[in-house]
Image 1: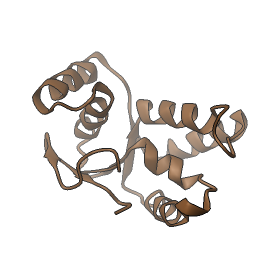
Image 2: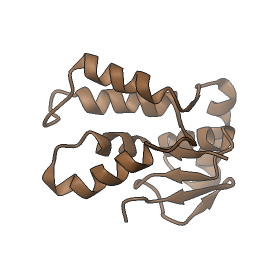
Image 3: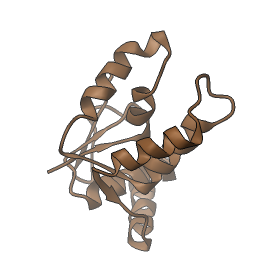
Length: 136
């Protein structure tokens, strides 16, 4: 069974903000795991956030792409029609945003037991996936 990384884990791993130093260390430790998983959506969101013009210490394109390629060592869930349908069902059943629902659907599709994120309710079990805020 794998664990699923949400975008904020990847973003904290590159943070240079001194106020986020503890989160950066925690994210780095998580990303050293061998049982990680993520989705195309997470990689897309990482690229968008890491390279945006308004981000302090934004990454150059080449560096962001290099990190994305390195993280493909994890299991990666593609976006499919089945995943879209599952996300839409989760959205209605659990009242998450579509994007959070797609993350949960991807984690479930990969058979992940835990979803590491700070964006959802810590300790909540959704569709067989436990939401864990590793930065608490």
